[in-house]
Length: 311
Image (cartoon, rainbow, N blue to C red; front, top):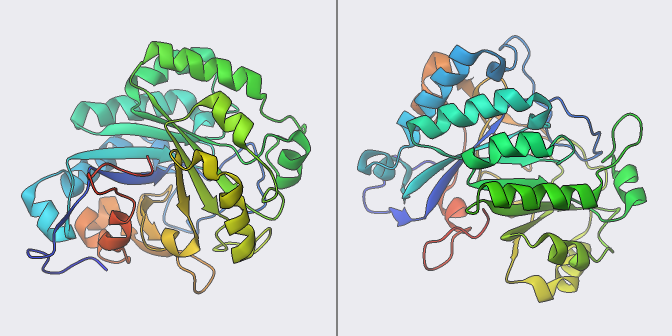
């Protein structure tokens, strides 16, 4: 939980990450997708309103800037703050992402993005790469048919062409030599027997985050403990890159904002999310106190030298 008096329990981390899920819209239909929010009458996707999204970014920075007051309040000490833009598929709205990244950079955020890669053209990469510290790509399989069965294909059954993606990544690294690459892989009932080693070696990411399918919205494609363990064992040669997260690691350990501008949190009970009040109405501090977040679980992603394990 959020400590009420953390003056004597402050631990140290390198970077605090705020995950803003800007949209539920996506050109893929992954069967295990967790990007399902109950917006109801709360409002439309906030990122579409430039003034409102700028106000949200400023309020979040005020709440989570690396200051002694914020460190004591959260029971965690961090050196920098990163805004991670996710979805849905955020790059369906590429120019909005460029705008938000520029705004966030301007007030002191580092910025990252999580994308399925399908909309990441060389032209967009040229604009976006200088504004990013981390490019995150969701890749679950190197097998075209497995991707289609998972739902990682558009309405015309087109899937991501990995050769084109590799070239675009290389272009981004030329544009911004400091750009770090993170690969996210969700291990599920359709890919847990696969060996991703050749693809990961080809893409050469800085980190490979391996996540077990989290049954918050659906149990479709859920896997057993031993199946997740087998997947990790198969890729043990890449342990220097891997950050693995089982279901218990992911629950109440992320700081997340939904498309309408509310903090939300996952749970293993009830099959749905818990929401705070809209941040622009209640303020970030009051809204954040309405959800559960465990500083020690977030801290578990850090190494002994206080560098982040999972970008």
